[in-house]
Structure formats: structure tokens, C-alpha cells
Length: 540
Ligand code: NOJ
Ligand code: CA
Figure 1 (cartoon, rainbow, N blue to C red):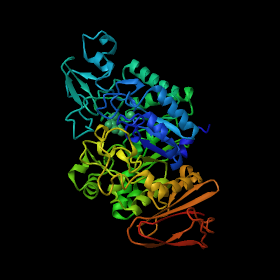
Figure 2: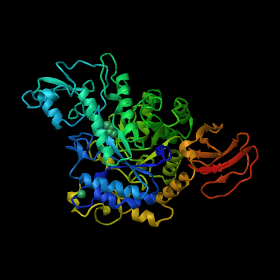
Figure 3: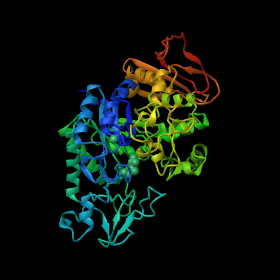
Figure 4: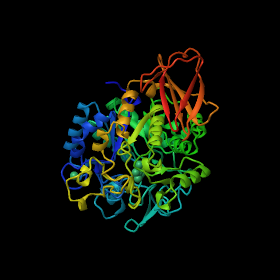
């Protein structure tokens, strides 16, 4: 088994609740997903990342865990999970689950014991969470869920003290200064590895420890603990990939790779909003600047890149001016805004313009890192801003134009969330069956793109050199790996553009279009004409 498989992989993020309902109760489940694996194999992704499937009161869609060692009954059983993994592996698909180490649900028995002095296990769990007599400690830590929480401390009358939480007040932070907590989270990891998973996406990594006088993010103690976690995985199951969610500036994220001894992968959060700025402004500068600020990472490591995910499009890692621009441009209706972000899906963000959606994907698939697709975006699904919080980007997958979009056999009123039924993005127009039958659909385009990407290891492993033509509407770069040099050219503007690209010494020759196989004769430079939002993938 190739241990650094994640460096060539395309990931598909999905919410089990939203994907396919196997037992007709209106809620997507593991059996439903298992029955749809052929779709994912045919699409051409390599790995599936499941949003939380653990026991939970679901006040944060499972990021509020009440039992780390079981599957939520809505989704099935551990047995169902093992079946899913086995069936995925048969199709060459890998499976990534979540680890939510920073906090639990307030319903978790550990918290119940911790908060209640009369609880029989109080002595054991008393210090498993971060308690304080006052609410003024760690005053330099920012509030993340700004639209919901006034403070990172909430008073618990039972214990007569405040507990610390970086997210919702129903998600108390675990106390990593307690050795038993440190040990327990390794047990949790061992348990999910034993179920057969290939990777673990670790939630909210910057916040494990708190220290007075700091912003309580990225602390050295936090890195020490994750190195310990990695050492455990290395000794127990070295093929298992660890992916960190650190929504931080590139120089701070760099530390989460360590010397190749911490996380295998980190999401590149700051790149994402700059792709949207570049698309809106029609020029490559924002992308150039963030790539310039992106440090080298150890050779065994990889960036995770994405356009959208299950959360709001976060605007934490931008300047206030950039945030104002993005909010104005992409979230004109205040209901589209959430915390420091935008709660919309990709297709509506890009005006449902097929050229821009393809262009955005083309950049995602060819720039640095391993790309993550978000379920439904391969169809150009829409969102429902009438639903609260982030629920509007987590609606049922649109399979066909039958009842409930083919998602569930339950009566429509019993679905966990409504299927999108509005004209443009409604399931009668936007669905898998229809796009499969249409050779020009987004789905079929993406299928082809993934097949081409798979043939060229330079996309996952190659170096990146930006070409920076004078025409700033043209984002062009070389990816080189071994003998291969690829030239990727993107027109960020709506108008057709001409560009002269100087070719590096030694590679001038006969570039072949990776999509059409067409070969062009060129000299020392390559003159290209691109349609508005057009792009070319060339092998030199
Ligand atoms: C990040 C997750 O992506 C988000 O959905 C969740 O609400 C927070 N972490 C808290 O766990
Ligand atoms: Ca179900």
C-alpha cells in the first residue's frame, strides 16, 4: 500500500445525513451511502470524507459528540460502517472520518459527571473540562461563533462555575492539561483505526490548550500533543493519514506539519477566499500574493485545497478590506452572511455560470495540493438561505427528478431537511440522472477532468512556478514532476484574452492539450487565445 496516497488523491466531502437514505426514515445513512458508492467511483474521486457520524444530540450536526465509540443510530451501526469501508475499499475508495478532540457535547457523560458534584463519577471527571471561578480568564481569545456566542465562558449553576468553550456553549472544551484526557483521545483514534478507516480529519486543531496572556491558538503544548498523536498512528497504523483543520495564516499552519512528524495534511484556508477574489476581480494578484506567503512543506506532506465545504465560506484569513469586498460581492443579502463568512454554495456564489464554475474547478484541480470537492457541487446544487446557520448548504443530495429527488422513500414531510425545489436549482433541473445523460453537463465535465488529473502525478506532487504574464487576467503556471512539465492557463476575466507565455528553457516544443490531445507547434514562447473564463491544460 502506498503510504503517501493522499498526495495524489481527490477527496469528496459528504454529509451522511444528506447523501442517501437507505431505510426510508427521511435521514441519510451508512447503508444508503454504501448503495451509492458506484456513483463516487464513477465520478473518479479517491477518498470520501464523512462529516461526523458519532453519537450526538446533533446540535452542531455531530461536532457535538456524546459518545466517541459509537455511530449515531440515525446513520446505522458500527457494523454498517465496516461494511461501508469494505465496499469502498473494493472500489479503490478510501474513507476518512472525523476526530473532534477539542470539545464534546454538554450531554456527554464525561461533562455530566464533571459538572455535578453529586455525580458518582465526579471525582474522576472533575478536571476533564476547563473550569473557572470567574469569566475573565483567557481574555485574549477571540470568539469564533460570533453570531451566537457572547463569550467563551458559560456559567454552570450545578457546578457553580464557568466552563470554557471555543465554539457553541453546548460544546465544552476538554482539558488537555489532564493526562487522562490526552490518553483517552488516543484511545478514540485507535478505535476508529480498528474499524478500518484510512484517514482522520481532525477538527479545530488550534484550540486544544489555553494559556493566559496568549490568544489560546497554536500553542506549543498543542503541537506537542499532536506530535504524540502522530507518533501513536505511526506505530499503530502508518498508512492512516491525519488531516488538520487549522483555519490560520500559512505561516501558522506550517507548524502543524512539523518536520513531517505532525499532520500529513492541512487545509489551506487562506488560499480559498483569494480564489474568489481573483474570480471576482478578474486578475491573478491575490493568488500570487498568498502563494508567495505559503511556505514550503516537508516532502511527505500535502495541502488540502477546496472551494466550498459544509461550513460558511470563512473570511477569517483575509484583511478587513478583502472581507468587505467579498461580503459585498458574494453576499449582498445579509441573510447570506454568517459569523465571519458566507453561507452559500458554489454554484449560486458564481452566478450559476457554467464557465466560471468549470474555471474554479480547473484551478482547484491543477494548483497546489490535493483537492476536496463538496457533495452536490459536482452538479451545481443550490442552497437554502431560509434554513438556519449552515443547514442551507447541507440539503439532500439531488439524485433524480422523482419524489424527494431520489434521496429518500419517506414522505416529504419526514425528511431531515427539505429538498431544494426552486426553479433554477431545484431537483427537477439539477440532478445526477439528468447530468449523467447530458454529455455537456458539469458532472460529465468533472468526471473527465478527474480522469485526466489522475494520469499526471505532477498535479499532486509537482513543483509550482507561476508565469505572471503582463496580462493579469491570465493565471498561468507550470507544474513539474520527474520528466513531466504541465502548463496550466486560466482566463480569470469574462472577455476573451490573448497571451504570450515565455516557455522555460528546455521545454519549448510541442505542447499537447490534455483534454483534446491536439498538438501545437511553438517556438520559445506560446501564444494562446482563451475565451472568457476559458482555460487550457497543456503537457509540454
Ligand atoms: C469546525 C467544523 O467544520 C464546524 O462544522 C464545527 O461547527 C466546528 N469545527 C466546531 O466543531
Ligand atoms: Ca435512514
